[in-house]
Picture 1 (tube, rainbow, N blue to C red):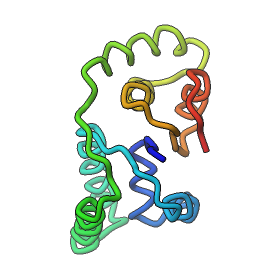
Picture 2 (cartoon, helix red, strand yellow; picture 1 turned 45 degrees about the horizontal axis):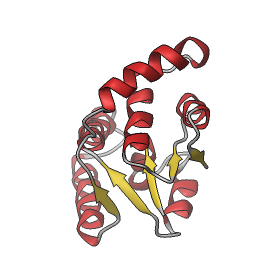
Picture 3 (cartoon, rainbow, N blue to C red; picture 1 turned 135 degrees about the vertical axis):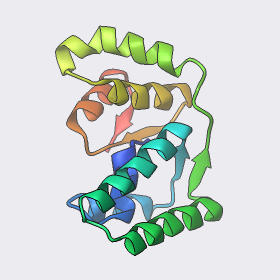
Picture 4 (cartoon, helix red, strand yellow; picture 1 turned 90 degrees about the horizontal axis):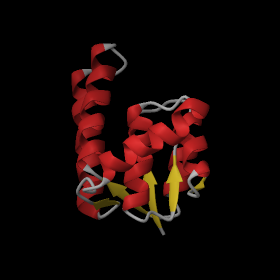
Length: 141
């Protein structure tokens, strides 16, 4: 099963938070998870923010990056380029669903990527993203 996850889901896999247990249980079923350059950029900034806020030490942040790379090498992540039409679809989703759901650009960009990559499921802990994913016919968990 190919699954598109938002970046905060990825962070919950590696940095313990209120969603980590759920995220780890879902990934234990060994789905293939899409990973785009958008994920890489948001991942780097999220871990940096954890270090900035002193939620992670520099060595902990380094270890989290190392674990992420090890999982990439092991094949957990299904690498993909950012789909060519993702930004056009993102804008369209914003026009069609933004007034009702209050979605932001990155919410709709992740959903647009999932649609363009033909993901079978969309996993997020963000209510707005989940509502948008459902509205466009994606399976959510």
